[in-house]
Length: 228
Image 1 (cartoon, rainbow, N blue to C red):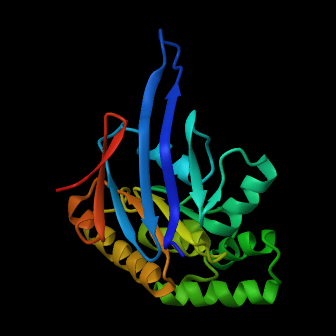
Image 2 (image 1 turned 45 degrees about the vertical axis):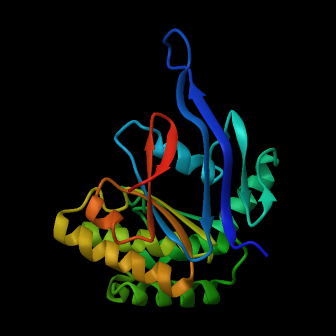
């Protein structure tokens, strides 16, 4: 059995931005993400890394090509089936945490589990375990405004993993933090990923962080290549 968790084949995507012709963001782009592998995605601003992550995570659809998760073709599924697959198989982390401000840390992690059918007690226990694993259990009942940026992002990691996805997609997850906090938060993320056996594709501008991952891919001119 293949250990490829995520496969993109021949992905192309363009946008019409009100200018003559279409702006081509991705051109016949392919990648494989293996079980337990952590891959850095390095790209200059505007190169299309967010578009690539959104297509990989079933938030957007390609113009051409296909997306597979665990060997199942996702391209062409109904919106409902894509939503279910995204909820169960994929976790997202963004540069800005996007936590719900009216809920505390625990509730932010419990809510996606309830949406996925988990019992409240089970969801709360998992939330507590996740918060403990990244060192912010004491902030469980604090709302985002009462937490530091690093604490908020750790909670966002926990929320992304709440439903035990197979794949983690992260778009500049430490880009909004100072260098010292960035290193601490990235270490917490890597600890979570390694302990859970996740496969992760992490976009970053930070080449030092990228070097700590299993391999590095560069996205430029719409195409992916392995970093030297």
